[in-house]
Length: 292
Image (cartoon, rainbow, N blue to C red; front, side, top):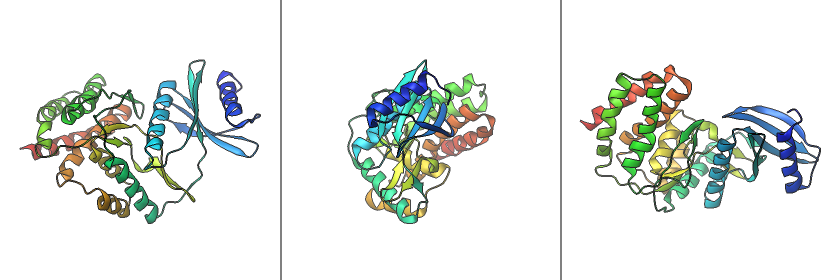
């Protein structure tokens, strides 16, 4: 990183937090909305993200919510801020190691404990982001309406703006009308969700166990987190076995799973383009067939 206001702001934050100066900056790759850094001083190391201030502030909020709950381990947030229009997020550095089947089982158990804790409403006190896409979370007592409007409806409107009309919008309109049918004999309780739990958003730290990061938290149907774990893989059978032993899933999950997957596939269509159109249409057709 070149010398500048942002670097100065980060190093000032680290000086206040840890009493160190003269930091060493090394890039650790690109992430959503910005750059990741390994920053060291003396014998300490931190993980720093720089980029869109709103995205990073929302991420910090999610990490703090997960940590405060206490079931899942998340990186500790040390500082957030902005300088000259660019944001930063300072996290503890966690050295990840290779995950074992036992680690996956511990993750499944911890996720179940997080999901079983009661909450009052669906949504979240603030909007946040799913990847780089805004995720709106207006609080509601009606889960089917929440998911229909704030998840599927928003993604479909965004897809139309991105030029994806025709069959996608026709099937989407039918699915939104009929979506309540997936909940005719199932009434989920609000649970604290990670919100973006794919295989790249968890790891293992020696002596600490599983850790999750890059959340898009809200209170929602716990099945939505499980569906995301199945979308891209990265979770072995031991994860699901441990989860189900503590929080068995409803029999209708196998159908609703595709409804929750659709939200993320539509988001990928909006973020990355045409390559996700076929998968979106396939999921919609299958869901509409299940409603007949």
